[in-house]
Image (cartoon, rainbow, N blue to C red; front, side, top):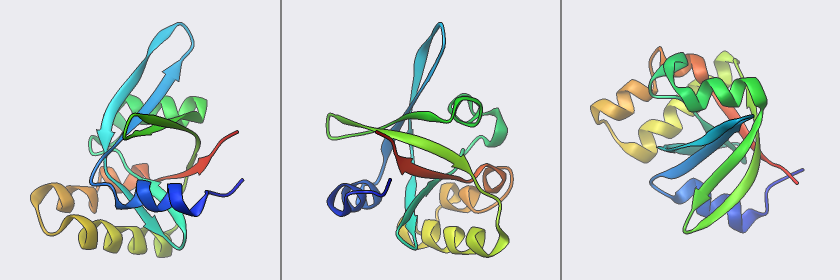
Length: 122
């Protein structure tokens, strides 16, 4: 399934979106994240690396939602590890978020080891 172009644009242009990841028998985790678009796809990373609870749940269960402007968009998470793609994602983070220490952290380990593509779910 592909993104509606209007929704993808709103998500990728937002400064922050909420990532919402449920787990059976537990309350969903909801945290703000930085999302970038590369080649028409949406990507995010865990600032805390593998220690991020949302990341561990997304990796394990593969589904959740992105929250923006009071709406939740159901998604599927897919871990990706492709050096050429990672370089493009690094550039997208720097272009979108500048040269702050937070943007630098998103383009270095441990964050770079947690890249996930975010696709719409039905």
